[in-house]
Image (cartoon, rainbow, N blue to C red; front, side, top):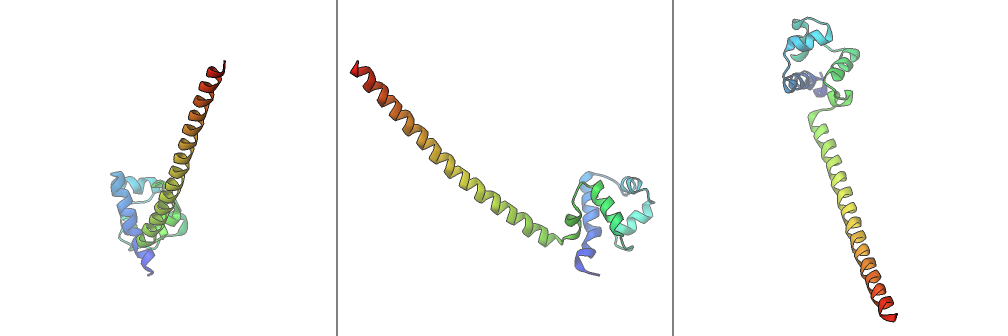
Length: 120
């Protein structure tokens, strides 16, 4: 059995526990018996794609999250965080530049008003 498939039962159990649900709660949502659901969590039984899709739907996760090994998910999330940090840094510099520009414009306007008043 591929490692990713081996981890699905553990993922399902972890998701269930995070929700604070019993095996019976999830079995009821899947319309199967508790022993049948227990076999899914302990990877005694093979999962059909339609059953896995239903489980992903119940736990509000994507099917790819269910299938990807945890290490790949972590890398994927790390990559997303790095990109987000880069975007935030880029926008921070843009905001700083715009703030400096607004201050410069304000100072120029203030100087212009001083000169116009003194010219009168």
